[in-house]
Length: 379
Image 1: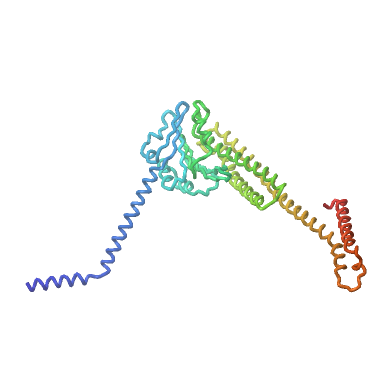
Image 2: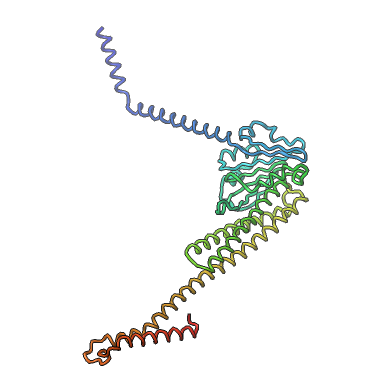
């Protein structure tokens, strides 16, 4: 009994003598495993959210048209949706703040180069085109007004043999008319390939530039009328805002023109010879956009000078009035100064009619000066 008791005491002593860092390492390992579990849970949630992302899919040929909303999970699992049987062409539209995982999933389905994935995710791209073996990648800026504010939305295009993929930043675009044309059986776009669909999308974007310039032109006309009447801080702020809007339109239309020039030259095998002429038309439209932008910028510079001139003119008018008033009061002040002196012997002060006479003289002087200024057309 006594030996058993001693043995238990020895075991307790050994357990209590274990190093403390062993317990600490165990705690760190448990915490690390817990953090990994949390990360894996978040990753799984992000994955489920990505797969549930709703996109637009339009499939069409000359006779058939299908438009539907699907999830990325459906696109990933159902290969029949991308089948090109019966010459079907596909337009996949992704917008409303897509994330990196959604871009990667779509690019993996179509075997897109990792550099293209990076360019799609990077939202501040300059308009450009990159040609690869089986597809081409193009970046453009969609420009339009919404609630009196200029919206600059980056749109990325991936053009393949029988498909076009578009990535937009926000929900909504300028492609509604194009969608209606796609629904018309026998239309040119239904008879043509994916390259013509790509042209139609770019054409819709450039048409949006003209709409934006038309809105800017109307603002310029209204602002010019306001500046002719009155020049205030509000008009100066509006001038600065218009200058900024024109700068953005010019900034993104210039490189897009060079992009359309390269495509129209037929260097890409994905653009058929019959479609190249349409891209040359877009090029010419962009030249017109740039010329109109330059014209509006010159008009706006003239408006700035007109605003400055009006401010100076109004200031001169105020100074003219003040000067006339001061000039009239100089002789009156002189007379008041003389008869305001405290000399004891001033004969006029003792006369009964001295005060009214002084008023008459002062009024005659003021009236004579006003008549003279009016005759000289100084006011």
